Image (cartoon, rainbow, N blue to C red; front, side, top):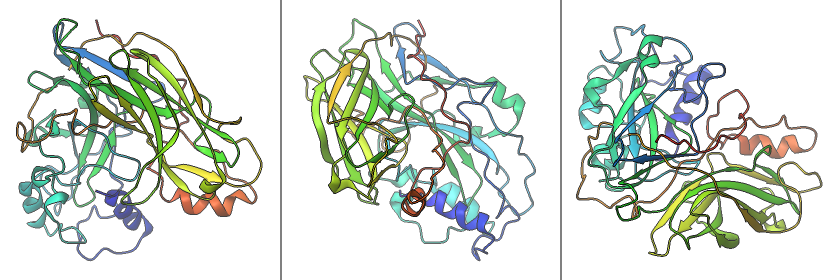
Amino acid sequence: MVRRAALLLAVLSSGFAVPVARAGNGTHPRTPVLWEKEGELDPPACMTVVDRSVEPVLHLPYAIPYEDTDVTPDEVADSRTHQFLAFCRAFDAQHEPPLWLSQADVDKAAAKGLVPPEPLGPEDVLETSTALAGCYTRITADDERRPITFDMAAMGVDWDTTGLAPGPWTVYGYTWEPVANLWSLRPGVVLVTDGPAAPAPPPAAALEVATGEEPYYPVGAEARFEACVQAMDGSQIQLYWAEATADPVFEPWGDPVAAPASGTVTLAAPVDPALAGKSLLVRATITDPQDRVYHAYLRDVALVFSGGGTTGGAGSTGGATGGTGDTGGAGATTGDTGAGTGEGPSPSEMNGAGGCACTSPPEPRGAWLTLLLPALALRRRRRSPPRPPRRPADSLV
């Protein structure tokens, strides 16, 4: 689903009335799940490996910005609560999971007069989505939604991965407060494995901009990214770009390069004049020797502008450098696999990966302002603090 939540929140926060959303919480900002919080919670690692031969349960710490429990009489009874889910694929910066989890949720909200601003179709509800059938799991159940309190957040959430297909998973926090329900993507990717004696899982990767850089690139520069990787020897990784639209068409960007079996690879591609003025979705696709594919997406829309300057990467054309690092580990969640589990595609077929980290853009200046401001409206909602230094992958053994 295109980022309908962000659009709806923008309308709600603008002061304009939404006739179909009459609840007293109509203009109340939805409280996100924070996966990092300055002075309290470090950002997640780019790659977290769950070795189920050691421990299938992964503890997921999270935080909240403030407590939020003042449910108004015209909200649903369990409004202003948090829930946690995982997906066997990722979503680009213009898309996210459906904002509604079940028809029961839709009916419950409708009974309070909280109907969406447009009719819902099957793909607007997670349990009836054919595109995501078999590709998600509830970490916490719908009837286990958590109050948004500091005490509850301090407990974190335990994810039992028993029964899940091995492979990469992206984790989300979900704020249930109709109609403007909200997703909060956990940076990085979780790779579920069954240990060194089991067959190798599908490849996993997560993508971010190069350390110390921002996703703003002048024509003639070099766009540089980093991908953390866990894959079979002989795997390759390729950058792609697409215009930031509802139906993006990805095209190769630069040349494919060898991926390390475990570690980080730097990817680079030339910023050609044909990209000037475009807002880009960026993807890194890793393919292993068994032709299993995984798509990792940059969490932010990248912006290309014409003219001089070195914002973002600077240099000539593509290329990549590889590096290695420890990504071993164990951990995991409670696995309600959702509608269609066992019937839908496997993680290797529904591939994808979450991005690694979130950054704060530099302040646009001068002539760049008129170019950057329209494109910034396309970007994913971001946290306010700047991205901290990149952390090595978690090792949970």
